Image (cartoon, rainbow, N blue to C red; front, side):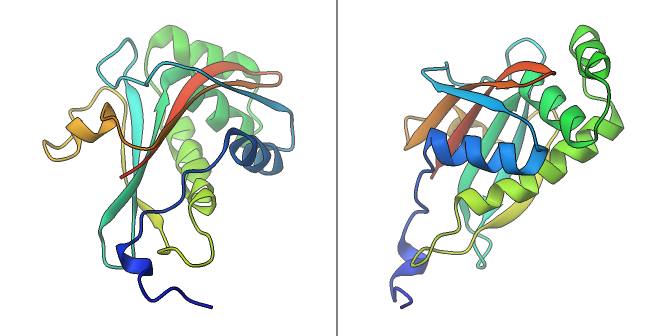
Length: 168
């Protein structure tokens, strides 16, 4: 049954387990996920990739923020690149085009974390590359105290990173 107030509801905040299961299913490898990570700060070292998730009415409803380590490791693992590629990206301090493209695919699939019966349907909107200024109306949300899940992740065979999931 569809909730008549669905467009007014916030999407549910996914759990760490749901996040782990999504990444493991997508990548076909173990992904260790632990709560208690600090908020990912796009202004920190290496910056952060910020993905917007929009309702069908183009209303911003959620964000996923990946630090350089999470973006490099998830992107390289999806593309089946050698782990050395993600390590090189982290040493250089910026994502190459190939990894940015594949992390975009990871973020597209991540929309499934928000799409549950009775809630607004969300889809991936804009992906903001690391080390680029965020639009003024988006930047304050990244570090806001809203329903959020801040996670340490470790992609088996690749490495660690941090991600934040926010429901606005």
